[in-house]
Structure formats: C-alpha cells, structure tokens
Amino acid sequence: MMAIAPSERAGHHAVIRDVFGVVKTIEETPDGYTFCLPDDAGVIRKAAKFISKERLCCPFFGFALTLEPEGGPLRLGLTGPEGVKPFIVAEIGGAVPDSITRPAGWQEGSFRDR
Image 1 (tube, rainbow, N blue to C red):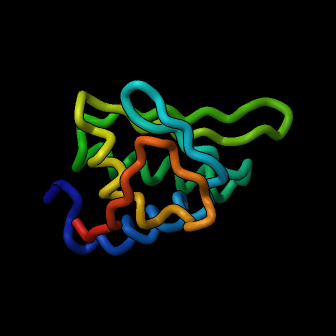
Image 2: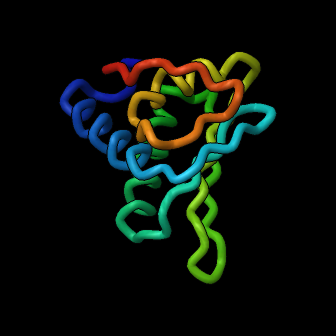
C-alpha cells in the first residue's frame, strides 16, 4: 500500500471518487465486479489513470477497460483471487453513488485512505 507516494495519494483518491462516482451499474462476476461508466473522454482518461496507479499498490488486481461500440458504455472490470470482492467493496464502495443498485453479494464498506 506504500507503492503510491504519499504526495500522490490524495490525487489518486480524487481519481477514485471521480471514476466510481459516475458508476451507472455494477455487475458481479465470478472473480470481482464490472462497473459500467459513461462513455466520456474524461472518464476514460481517469479510468486509465486509476488503473496505472492502482496496479502499483494492488498487483493482485486484474483490470479490464472496455468501450462498447456506437457510443455504448465504458466498462471497468476489477478482478482478483478468491476473497478479493470484499476488498474491492471496502476500497471503492464508498465512492459509488448511493442511488446505484448493488449486486446481491455486495456488502458496503467504506472508502478509506491508503
């Protein structure tokens, strides 16, 4: 968790809030979650920035960034080994809008400073 320099953590947390704060839907997958985001150039850039930093502190995460054709949604997949789902929820769950329906297995955590 110290892989992100202290001087960069606040910026990374802001990116997390920006990316996950615009989530439209969440889909549970066998090994994580897929977050549907708006097809917006700024969100695409921020999602890529999130991945570039998050992979430093959480090398066990798998990331998938998919942009559907014809203006379809941007999908950000977070996957990992067994037991990763509660970690994902604890780390980013608080950044997801309250209005979003969570998957059945989602147990709300809190967005914490790392």
